[in-house]
Image (cartoon, helix red, strand yellow):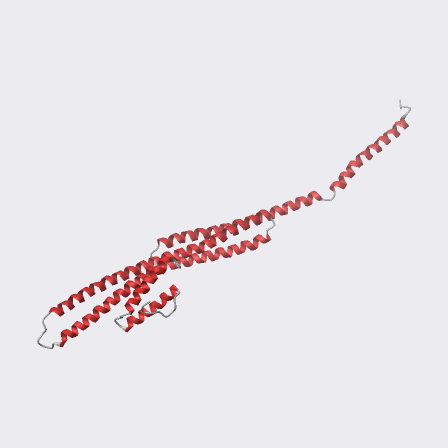
Length: 287
């Protein structure tokens, strides 16, 4: 049997279906309008792009830092070899290689500074600035290390020069003693029968030779004192005091020089000492 209200039921069913569709279309339409602006896709693309940039900048920083670290290790190894090396030519070659490493570090820092200005990640820019600051301190300290290495080298050369001067002084003193003994024997010996003036001539020549050797010994002593003064720190009291003592010794020799060549050598040396002491270029014998 068919229900009597079938037309009404059909009408109510259509009304319910239409109401259900309208109720379903409202959230679907809202969702469509909310998520149809592609914001999620764009955000995902932006994050992917930023991640790629971050990876590239990190790889570039790691490569530059590894290069700088390698240069630093080379500098440290060369410094150790310079301190232990005795051959001056090898030392000069090692110092030249160290200078090349320092220049390469300077170029690497310039490249890092240029790249850091174009980096998009703030943390990477800050890291690059910190590295640049630390390496600036390293380069300033490196200049001090180079100066100390030069002072060590000059100190070693000065010690060798002083040892040579001391050997020469010892030999000169032995010659003076031998000539003095020869002069004493000549003065005590009886005058020969033949050619009497030869004794006086020999005595005068020996005296001149002894005086020359004494001047040479005094010159070597004064010059050794001057060399030791130059090894001191510039503008120090010990340096000025030793230069004054050396100057006084040279002036004492200059009062009665044995030869003109010796006089000229002393005058040239005094000129350099006066320049070091800040005195006038001309000097006076009794000052």
